[in-house]
Amino acid sequence: MTTARFSPAELLDRLRGLNPELAVFGPAELSGRHPGEHPDNFAGGVMAQPGSTAAAAALVRWCVENGVAVVPQGGLTGLVGGNVSWAGEVILSSARLNRILAIRPDEMTAEVEAGVALEALQRAAARHGLTTGIDLGSRGSATVGGMVSTNAGGILAFRNGVMRHQVLGLEAVLPSGEVFHDMTRVVKVSAGPDLKHLFIGGEGAFGFVTKVVLKLEPLRPHRATAFLGVTDAAAALAVIRHFRGLSGVTLEAAEMMWPRYIRDHAALKTFDLSWLEDGAAALLIELSAETVEAATAALEEGLEALWEPAALLGGIVAQSLDQARTFWDIREDSGFYYAAIPDAASFDISVPPTFLDAYVEGLAARLEAIDASYAAYVYGHVADGNLHITLIKPGPLPEAEQRAVEAAVYTGIREAGGSFSAEHGVGREKRHAYETFAAPEKQALARVIKQAIDPKGLFNPGKVPF
Image (cartoon, rainbow, N blue to C red):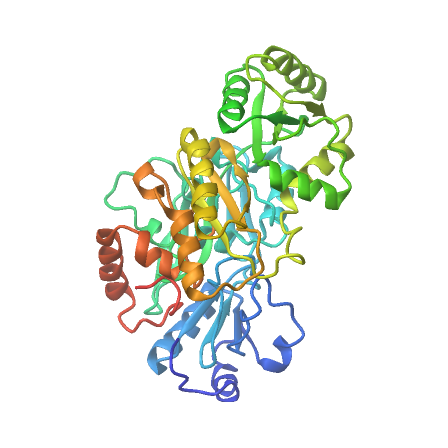
C-alpha cells in the first residue's frame, strides 16, 4: 500500500483539465457503481478514464512527476484482488477505450482498444464468420486489456492456448509515461526479444495496455453438446482424445465437474441427474461440424464406441439449444455456493492432465489431515489440467489455517510441472503463494525488470510482490 500524498479532492482538482480526452470521476460518482468482483476496487476514490492513448500517457506522466500510484483496471472481473485500490492512488480505467478499430477477415485478425469486452468482439467478428480463439464465462464484462494483463485462459485453452498465444501485437503506456508501440499483425517475428510479453500476464505492473492485435479463427456455430458420467479424469481424457482425433469435427469444450460439485449444484438448480450414476463425475463436451446433424451424429457415434472402453457412467445429449444452454449454466454459473460458504478459500491451479487423478486424490487426503470435516468443490478445464478448487467452509480462515490449506492445495504442483495460478493471476490474494511457491530465480528476475521499468514502484503496487 502506498502513502497518500493527495486526498481524493486534491487529485480531482489536479487531474481535471489535464487532457481534453481524459474523464475523471471522484467518490461521489463512483459510489453508485458496482465495483466488480472485489468491494475495494474503487476504494481509491478517484478514477481516470482516458479516451485515447495520448490521454492515458498524459495522466501517467503527471502521476510519475507527483509520486502518485496508478492502478490499471479493465472489466473488474478479476478474482484475486488485482484491481484493488487504496486512498491516494488513481484508478486508470480502460472503459472509454472501447473501440473495435479493425477486423481484417482475410488476415483473420482484429485490432481493438483495451476496453473492448470479449463478447462485443465476438459479436463483431461473427459478422465476418470469425470468432476469438479464447472464450470464458465472464465474456460479457471481461475486457481484452484485462485479459491480456492476466494472461486469461478459459474454455478453449486446451486447443488454442491462452491469451499469450492470441496476441500478435499491442500498445501500452509505460510507467514513465512513454508509449510502447508494437502493433505487429503477423505471427512470425524473429527480431530480438518479444517485449510485448512483459505486459501479457504482468497484471498492470509493467504498464497500461491501450491497444491489442489479436488472432481470430473460423466461427463454428453448428454444435452438439453432451453431459457424460465418468469415473475419473483418466476416463475423461480418453473421451477427449477420441473426439480430438476425428476428422470433420472439432472438440470445442471439455469441462469436468467432480462428484460433490455436480451434485450440489444440480440440486440447487433442480437439474435432473437421474442419468448420472452414483459417485460419478460429470464431463461436459461440445463438438462443432459443418452442420448440427453432422456434429450430433459424430457425438452419438463416438459415445457408442466409447461407452464400454471408457466405462462411461451415464450420459445425456442435448436435444435443443435451450438444453445445451442449461448444461453450460451448470458449468459456468460456478458461484452457486457463495451464499452458503461466503468468503470461502478458493484456488486456481494447473497440473499436467495425466496427473489430475493423483492430485485430486492427494488433495482430499491433505485437507482431511488438517481437519476431518474438510472437503472441496473441484471443477475445471480437464483437457488442459486447470482446476478450480473451493474449500467447503465459510471464510475468511484464520491465517495459520489459511496457510495450512494453501500448503495442501499447492503441494506437488511445481514438481509436477504445473502452476499455483493457472488463469486468475496473482493480484493481492495470491501474494503469499507467489512468494512461497514461485521459483526464487523467477522472482528475482521479475524484480530486476520491475525496477528497470518502474523504479518508483508506482504501477499497481501491493499486488504481484516485486
